[in-house]
Length: 274
Image 1 (spheres, rainbow, N blue to C red):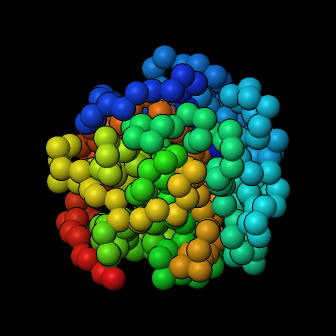
Image 2: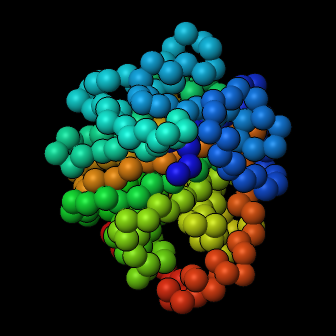
């Protein structure tokens, strides 16, 4: 199994850069690290708990510890023999999520109003009934920005929140199959985003970004990852989350086998819904 919960972020704030600036691949090292020159720069291994972790060394927890505002980070973890594992949610516990809406969190320290970033997570559904927006959601807003992005894993599709509507992608794909699935969200300059699922780009190409339509949910800057609304339901496990503010990075091109697998699952198409 891959790293339990790895968060990556550059320690020095990056200036706004336009467009995709290169390719970056998440590599599981199984250890926490502060600097890496070839992959996500700041990785956090939280095993057995995500509370009390301060990898950037600013004397503030990287995520809300325990309970805050009625929500809490996952408190149950399964460890592997080599120090890897997963963070586990339970549908019986409402609002289980990783959140950074507080001063000196990883997002507020390392993101400016229009900083580009790359955020990636690997999760799987383990049971329960999904909500109207799916079973795992991520929303993120830069500090001081007036816009944000939101993406959802659903049982048979993924969705991106465009202005006024959710747009569905990869319809008919069984994301509730008990296997781990990976999503990457890369922010370009302005309210522009690119999304990959299992290595497959959902945008038409790397010059056609999506426009974030999630509005402003936290002007101070925040990332919410997991179950943070009534539209999300079900049980899940988080394998890792990686975060980098040195730019908007693409996923390496998928192999021919991966492309064939996606082709067998059905041709991708999008459908807008309110």
